[in-house]
Amino acid sequence: MSRLVPCSRLLLRRSRAVPRGLLRAASDKGMEELLSRSVPPLPPYETKEKAPPPAELRSAEFMRYYRGLAGPPRAELLTRLARDFGVDHGRVAEFSAKVLQAREQQRELGALLQAEDRLRYYLNPRYRGLFQHLGRLEGGLRFLVELRGDLVEGLASKEVDGPHVKEMSGVLKNMLSEWFSTGFLNLERVTWQSPCEVLQKISDSEAVHPVRNWVDMKRRVGSYRRCYFFSHCAIPGEPLIVLHVALTSDISSSIQAIVKEVEPLETEDADKITTAIFYSISLTQQGLQGVELGTYLIKRVVKELQKELPQIKTFSTLSPIPGFTKWLVGLLSSQTKELEKNELFTESERQELSQITGDCTTETLKKLLNNNEWVRSEKLVKALHLPLMRLCAWYLYGEKHRGYALNPVANFHLQNGSVLWRINWMGDTSPRGIAAACGMMVNYRYFLEDTASNSAAYLGTKAIKASEQVLSLVSQFQQNSKL
Image (cartoon, rainbow, N blue to C red; front, side):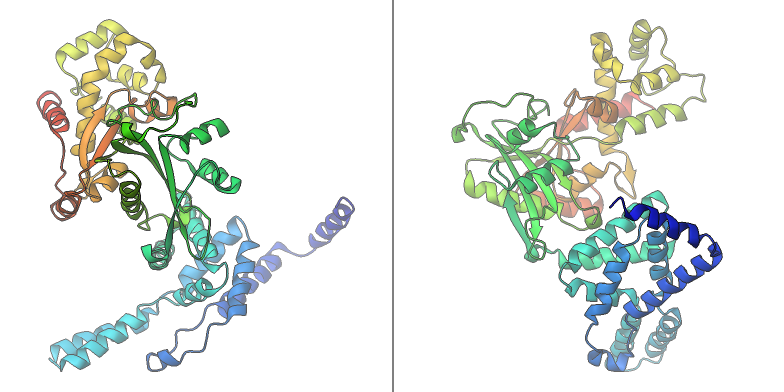
């Protein structure tokens, strides 16, 4: 390979003689021609059933070209695809008018339905045809997941932006939701005898409680533990979403008791198992963000556990509370206007904190919460216990986004029909747990006979089902804290 370096440098030197504008124009033209070849035209409505078969070679060419790009050129391709090969807005306006006309003229139902069908047809963006063709190729589904991952990441980082790109990401998400429906998914259990590649992917994808080493990984698939993932029939053996379960005798209140430093030597005793704790669920493919996989995985795993261990009657999570500390610090910042006196703590709590820290101004509390060192002080841990518990209860129960729980993990489990069961003080004492949620964790409990009605109530009326412990803390918050 070293002999090729001087030649490549020579080519680079020669290329400098070509103006950058011409190089860019040539690149733009090549990209434009590729997209024109790859994206099939939307055939007229009358001949939609007689459209030519997908051009596999052109779809494969697009896949190769895309994978050969990186950074700004790839972002440019995605932007052009979304902007120039979307919906024909002229046709949409034309057939929208015809639907309205059919309604106003009170024409027969068949004519109205046909007008609506034409409108529906022309609401399809052209790039949808390309995605459909790619989905039929060998390896095409994996590629589309990668492409959607690039869209999600690009939108988050603003490398790609605009309503056209957001719309294309949504269209592809809906298509993937159909292709990754439960009928195409396989439930697989991970054990220490699973292929090394699978264990490595499970380890790498763990987003909630990072795996420290192979001993830790062995523990998580060993005695009193279960690990499952969904794979797709077109991508066999590839974990798409992973669920870790602890088998216990009660509802766990601490993640440190589950993710232990030392692997126990004991063999599994089924008589000791009455409870299943879902302590981590991680999506391994960013391109499947927004595709409903987690709910189905939990339901399938519950059925699997009931078959294997019918004595299990209690199903619960031990979940992180991402964003709580950030929310609380923001709340404190919004109260700095009034004499540096926060109104989230009672007078006696402020006095106790003042005795420990020297003062109890908002800025002092913000620094305290932003610094993990406070957990080293037994006095501070004791003084902050009750106020932070009630603030956390309010964050999970009372803080809303469009009427639903603001916290994304809470929203996910409440949509599934769980009950906001118990908030656990010092449930996660790792630096990550302290930084994200002041060390607190929460149990969402699944009463299987009530999940359907709870889910319907939450989705329909936005009502959160919560335990007495949580409601008591919420009541304390409403009495003692002012927002």
